[in-house]
Image (cartoon, helix red, strand yellow):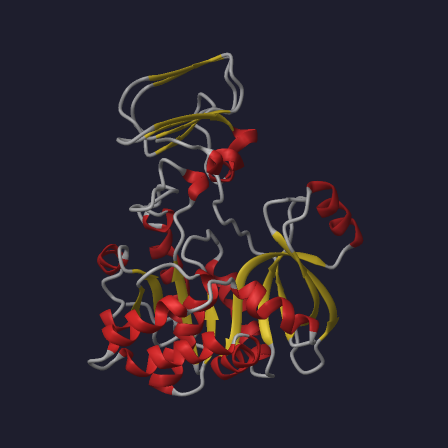
Length: 361
């Protein structure tokens, strides 16, 4: 055993929360409703995306909550055997991110009283875990000042696939954090380029760090029925009335994202801060971004979950996913070929975002 002391990365009073929802429609047919992308080892590392997320977060808190759908809970439990069953919170149906995060906040307060919580999606790729944890620690200190804190990712290009955060002045009482002037929905590429040229803009990765009481307090002002509902559910969660209360109250909760429910209106009031991050980050939003995370083979093809033969003839930039039959690509640059037991997809990498428009009987 090494005599080198292990650095304690635990943030006092901090509980990470991992919302594990969505299906990754732009990664169809690899990702499907019964097999969402967070349950898949997309990068061939031996760990699924949710396993990598939990591994990245586990050193920061003494416990961690997962919020996921009922249909995915068994697979989540199987993939994360070290997470207690009581900390895998199941939603009967999707109600968007605000309901999931608010229920986690209410349940944390019900069990422990006020804590600093952090919400981090299950399907993001962040190779530098230490850099990530350092930014989260800075965000947690900023959250102790009463701010809702988001983590801004340094843009690498004027992407239209992400929302943007406009940073303002530094926070005097929270070193490393900045006031948020505004959130911008996904802009077109020209607008994104002008934002980057102006400076002060970061990608919005949907990571939030905040005191449970601050979050629920804002929710009580802005979405009172939602706040009341999650508190009712949390009060019954660890008792015999959970099923009845959940079935009665959950369908009444407003379906709304945390950006619209809390981040945007509270930012307009001066209550949101941002901690900038320079670590590499990707939300693996489509096959083009997935291919960009992997190294091509000697023939120039990116292989994902595939050992069967590939032949390329004047076909640079090919991506071939899954399947056991030989695949040949001839005269098509940047082609993507995806084969699963359920379907076959062929597209160009430049059209990767359009997979969501596929309509099949």
